[in-house]
Length: 214
Image 1 (spheres, rainbow, N blue to C red):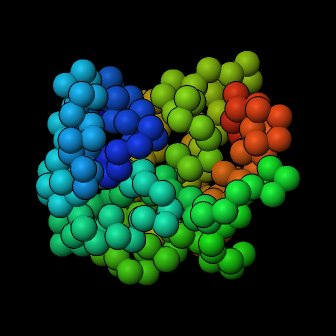
Image 2 (image 1 turned 180 degrees about the vertical axis):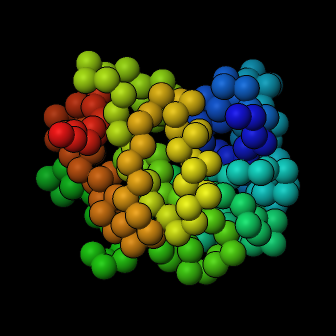
């Protein structure tokens, strides 16, 4: 399955995903508000750097990989008309600009809402799928654990979009469990909080979640 993939963001999460999907044979570009920031990286990796709008225009599928607090602004800059009917993997988390408390990160969302739902409500004609938010970037591509492939929990309202995402996740070594519609992101987003507790508390970051079934 070949796709034109656009990654919205320029941090380590965006860079890792861009390089990873390029290694699987996809045509990848990265969208950023500051192209010069990634000039050296772009030359080294052979990945094009464009504006958010140009990236959204180019891509058949997009990955939103920015700070949760910047998600709305980046999507607006990309332009809803350029993302119309497209799948967007939402890898963001609603992390507040405050330090962890006993290893627990604060969120700016409440318990009965999620960032995915807020995004989907504003961009109703875009097919968002929550994924890649509950593990560290070192484990994104071809994760290796003694217990076998880890589980990526996903959620979203559009079944066809989730089929696309499941296919891409399988290419990079994940098993996927579909938790349902966008409201399920209320449970999936806090998995980031849970994943980070051992890291902030004990500097342990080499783990992932796995759903066991009988």
